[in-house]
Length: 253
Image (cartoon, rainbow, N blue to C red):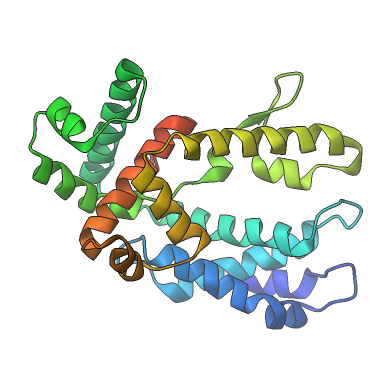
């Protein structure tokens, strides 16, 4: 769908124009673009992410079902962020070497956690890979652009074991509400278990970055670390969460 087409057809409950929607929700679009732009290479432009977010907003206005017990703002936020992530995926800016490095790091974490029954420490991961701790940290720094968890990639399952996803749960009809509510609870429980299993410092970083919305520099001051070290820990945390949640790596499809 082009921007012009979306502008011409999008309506929220038939009463709001695309211009009114943009006036209200453009700050939200900019917020999500700002969150993502810090984790992708310089070749990805902020304006392009915002354009993708605008299309996501207008698409959400067309798809939103007012009979559902969910706020439009919540639904639109998923659509906006999803549209931006789709753009990043299609951009395909990650060299094959970085994809391979990221897979190696994640697979090492998965194997060590399976063997030890606990989160692997960086020295253990480095030894498993046959490299030093500093080299391991350098590799974490190199793959920081891949440190985006695509929660819409993580399937949830209904009572009859049919695979759903987050957007399906949000978009399902009112008749399917109990089933989709159960699926969302399953997703929330699984995510909570994943966060709880993170090492303490990574849980603190997750809270500061995603809940308190501090940037890397501010987190570095709180944790008394360098900004690059915080970035490395963040990359390690995301790779660990991917392994715990069973998420595919970007570009592995």
